[in-house]
Structures are given as structure tokens and as C-alpha cells.
Image: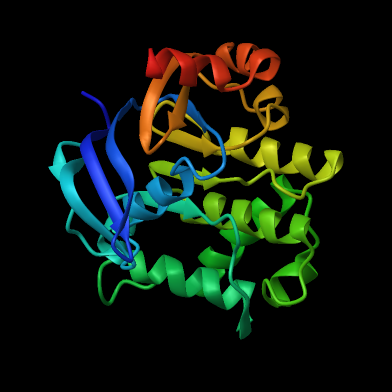
Length: 250
């Protein structure tokens, strides 16, 4: 059984329909990539999966491990094992990365069972080492004054600390130089395991050279129109999306 199963999903924002019948299955232990032209609905799908309140699901279902989460609140989805790395992470002045991560971890734990500070610090410092990040980084206010690369590294640090089951990474590679891209990709690969799965949303082939997808899905016009093996990305790189759109119209 698929960990995530999306059936005939339609969703709108401000009365405008963006998702127009998305069908998608993601298996445990798999790396999935989602590509498509600008405006095809990729980021909308990520936000709808996480339960963003601005988006209205008008039809269809989202099942996570067989449970219908279509109407579930974002915090409940997080507790069920979903994680979203934002395309444009928000700045939170006055809240350090360390305090933010500890609060986020505690919010996912049973009430009255907060993670002890020494255990949290060991977890945090271990993941900082994996990502080759200076410990001073966690004393900074979340995303305030961060470069694009620093924001993305902070998101991957959150991924490793939170340790979800399904990670949705929305353009995690945007704005990264080659060194930062390698560090971020290494972090994603460290997270991946047999009991995990990933959905990487990207416009570019380059991150997929470091994080190898098992399956590549192509979204056009609010639908998944094609799914194939990871090497499909080479075909897209060569021919673009025009050949798929022609097939859709014919």
C-alpha cells in the first residue's frame, strides 16, 4: 500500500481552481521528483498536502497510510509524519533556530512529555555536524537576514531534527551555489531510508544529480500527466514540456 495516495484532487485559492484532478501514489522507501512548467500547480499541491488554510479542497481525497487527512489541520498532519520545506521560508524575528526547533519537536510529542534539554542539544548538535554547520548558526533568529543558501540549510536542519516520514521539499535547490547544493543534497540523502519517502519539487535537473529519484512525475495544467523512471529527467532536459503538452491535446 502506498504511504501517500491522492485521488482526483481538486483545489482552489480565492475562487480560482489550480488543482484539477491530481492522482498520485508515493511508496515508502522511494524518492519522488515533481517537475512542470511555472504555474502548473506544483507549489499549490505542496501547500494543499500540508493543509494550508488559504487553499480549499473542492473534490478528491488525500490518504496518508490509509487514513483520510483531507480535512485534517496542519499540526495534525505534522504529527502524522508530514513535513514541508517551504519555497520561501518566513522570517521569525526574536525566535532563535534552537528555540524554534525545540518548540516544534515538543508540539509533536504527547502532552507533558517534552524532550529533555540535554537530549535535544545532542540531537541538534549531531545534525549540525552532519550538515557541516557552525553551532553559532542556531543562536540566530529564524531566517532573519539569512542568505538564500542559509535558509535552505536551515530547512534541511529542521528536516533532520523533526525526522518525519514523508518530506515534501518545495524548490529546496533554488538560489543555491554548487557547494550549498551539495550540502543540502547530502542532508536529504542522510534523511532518506526504507521507512521514509521524499517528494522533491524542482524546476532543475541539478539537484536530481545528487538526490536520485526513483520516480519522476510531471505536472501540467493542475494534473499529473506523466510518471516515469528517474531518467525521464534527461528527456525533459532535452525536449522540455512541449512534447507532453502536444500529446495531451492530441
